[in-house]
Image 1 (spheres, rainbow, N blue to C red):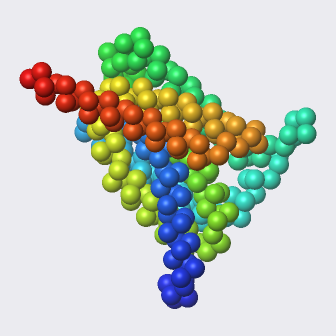
Image 2: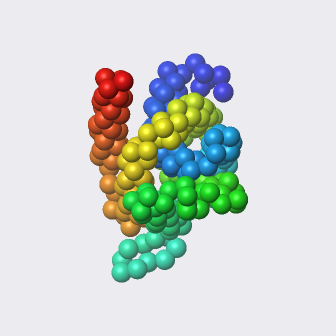
Image 3: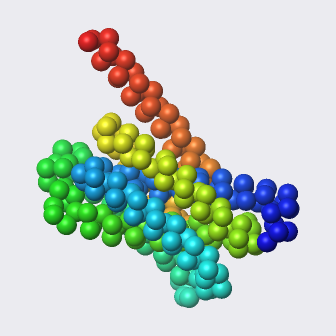
Length: 241
């Protein structure tokens, strides 16, 4: 352990992996923000706390099961020369879940049913939100940790990077969720991001890798445009008043 603390290479690996985990955590934050936007604020805060705690727990659990996790990348069946592992199956299932969830929410937004008729207004909404968070946390955690294993071999560095990234995700999740709630147009943008992320997960499952840099650039560019729209709208209201 002392060797890791005094090794420049270990610190460089920690910083690099932490940055990567934070970037990969953007998916988690967007999904959480969309999910909690339809439930009361008190429940929304609890749901965010539970969701991010589960994200941290899943990641540490997967890190402690490295041998089993590496086995998940081995082929379990083949279809027309295309081999599928358990990781591929989980990514495809998770991607389809994201696409279906985002499409359903977009449909509700376009039909203007929103909170009046959406599932989040029902008594069991909080429980259903937590179930969805658990499902998607498992998918994102699997993708995140397998990426970490490919970059770093030392378990303490991986655990430290995951913990730091989850703390930063927790700090960022509140402002992002409030922004989505206060500016309804951003929710549609976030849902479009989820469709994009879902397609990327399904593509990964079918061995067609879409570089994440393209996806995150598209998200950053669209978010910047939407931010300028929000600022312009706010300034117009101030001018009218």
